[in-house]
Image (cartoon, rainbow, N blue to C red; front, side, top):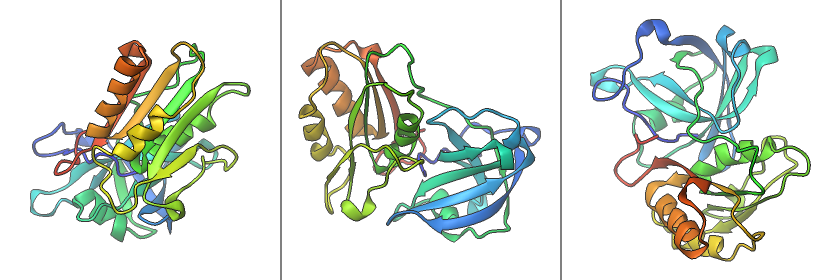
Length: 248
């Protein structure tokens, strides 16, 4: 998903041309209101492993400053046909990344980095808790999908309304959603209040928190100060904050 739009060049880390991978856009479709799925195909996507919760840097037009790297969450990776689908939030107003995602069409050529992760599932966790708004829901639901049978999971996700909810990629698992309506997702009291209401097993598990920066910080404070979890048991991935998208 859009997730954090990272300035690639200038002013941010630049990938050398030889490190970028060639790919082609093969499909673009609306997912839920405010989100679009963009499927890419390229030889390299058949060769590498993509861990659940990964994100992918993509080179997009940046206007007068030239190409820039923007980072999106991986929704589905299918090595058998060398394809990878990104689920992207269309921010309004948005920067070059949202503009590209809103206008891209099948047949276009792009260059990408390789998938990478800020957070990954902890196989030692006694139970797993997933928390995020819609931008964080994309990586979190792919992680939920990857849990082994019998794993204990809890969590809550936030979006604008019922029409914007979506299940995990295979469609069989989901988490409870809460709705903020027209309010901003930044520093959302709706999501934090829902986390407070979660009934969790005794003792800490591992929490995975993704989305807007201020909301992530508030959720971390809840787990650490109100529930007494150790800070290392709360893994965070910030995607954006008002006025600044390039923080993933």
